[in-house]
Image (cartoon, rainbow, N blue to C red; front, side, top):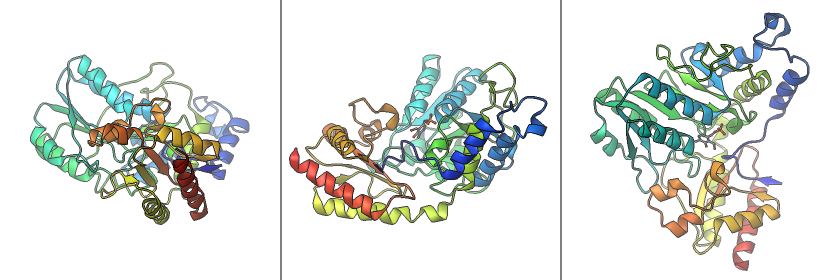
Length: 374
Ligand code: PLP
């Protein structure tokens, strides 16, 4: 298989698999049991928090809470705001993942004003619009760090600066699911305005079903799940030690500097693609994750092309992985003003560190062959 859908999920590394296996097979005790200090079952959570602190340059490991992934983290953040505030304005960008969009919709239904921030045609959020709209009634602003479909990196530092100058008490959340391991993040420096951040291990070679929330020290999240009191009483449920061990292993292998070489391969792919076909590369001139290429070939259905590539053993994405199966165009492209038919034909090729030039050549040949057939 040639796997080029790394924004949907990534392959677990050998170290991740070994660590997950260890905590399923050998150290399988309950992390909340009084024996945990002897069995080592309390190690994965501690290591996961320590390593996430290192990766994100956060103040302390205590700033991290673990969940089943970014969907849960995003839902938690919005429901936490709803249980502490009665009303106010909630801002999200118009290109957020459905787990943010639908969580924000819920708040709107119970009385919050929901404002969706537009993006420029290249997919970057309109800062002017945000600057004009923020007010003393703003409670929460949620802007994703990098988009899952186009890979566009949002100006988190500038958004944070605007929030702190216009509505200092508002909470700033960023869904960093696609950004971790791919761009450098520093919560004590250029991202120091971020209050809450969500993440998911399976986007950086960890296991599926484990992720978390960074919560700036001093800020309080409201309890999400009642029960055994895990996660400081905020998110009960037996600690997922294999998942946390896998997350910690994946975090320990993050190397953002080395990741930059992926960009040479993505750029090579795009250069060759436009030489061979009249492809339109979305967000080409925007700051993008170096692994992501989102494009349309006029007159070609992205879904049909993706399916015929899958038959050949080449896996690419069409729009958001989480809404695959649906034939509606990616919301992000519609928000950017891309023509409906062109947006509906979108393909997303997302590389990993392991992607080779040879694999990209095979993909390019297959795309040309399949488009000639249709
Ligand atoms: N946020 C973004 C930007 C994503 O790309 C995804 C998954 O595709 C999610 C949230 C959901 O993550 P999870 O699979 O951990 O629920």
